[in-house]
Length: 130
View 1: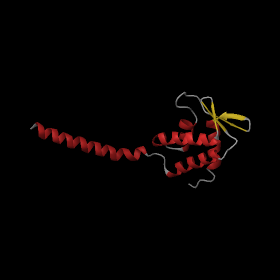
View 2 (view 1 turned 45 degrees about the vertical axis):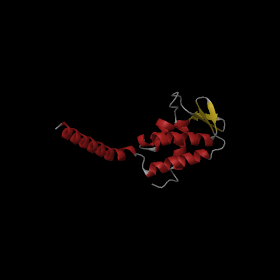
View 3 (view 1 turned 180 degrees about the horizontal axis):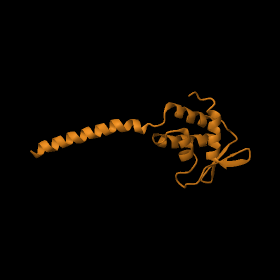
View 4 (view 1 turned 120 degrees about the horizontal axis):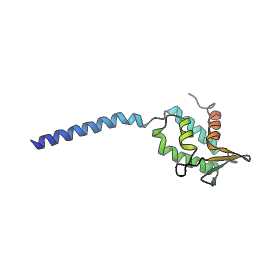
């Protein structure tokens, strides 16, 4: 009798796991294709800014290193993001290690990465089709 109960509980647990997996999967992939394209365009434009210095945790990096770092952060967080703006505000602007804001220096002017990336995405949005 206990074996029958154990088997039926195993089947029930397996079914629950399967259902949870099926319903949770769409919830994990939140960034739609348009938002992915917006982020990709912004990162591409960032990589083209050869005179840019990206400062994180006191260390200076060129634009290519900045893009590489932000792509890595995106790969680890994209399932928790709904929009490019969330990526900028919650991921691309601040160190997850120190909590310090990233800075960007261009043409001798320094500003937060958050402000810079919002301006950059406003420019690149003109080229991304809805």
